[in-house]
Length: 236
Image (cartoon, rainbow, N blue to C red; front, side, top):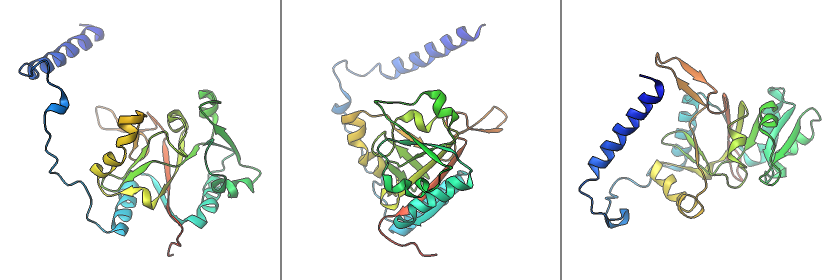
């Protein structure tokens, strides 16, 4: 049996199961007609610092590199990280705050190139870069996950998928405790604006049938995160 036949048979089997499961559903019924119990926990009861620390712990556990700084230290930290990686070209969304790049602008050896929806960089340009710097929409402490929704400071989805390195800024007030909090907060993005979401839990990785881990398959091989306390100092 060919691969195409196997795929076709699997598809037919799956659709058959779906049809069987829906056999007793009236043709006029809509999803909103059936009440869904929402009695699961919807908000974290943990203290803010505990939520932030949990996010950092789980993100590191996913093999990401994490730094924690004050907002006043952000530009300097970005410049130090780029310099340590000997970067020469960094991709940024066109709406990224200039203040974030102040430290880089002082270093002639590091160039930044803005990507926008009206003037997008080619995939070849993105692949040839040393990495990308973005913000995020939200982060989830419970899973160590960063969420991008193509909103402010994030740019097009593709710029965080092609480069081999992603430097992401996460403000502490963007970190929620548990998954239901994130989904509720993203409801307008999902339902009204219908923007694509990207969930990032560590560097891109997958495993083959023998469970050998392979990194950089569907996105950056290296994820580095700067957790920023907005308008406050971080104790040493």
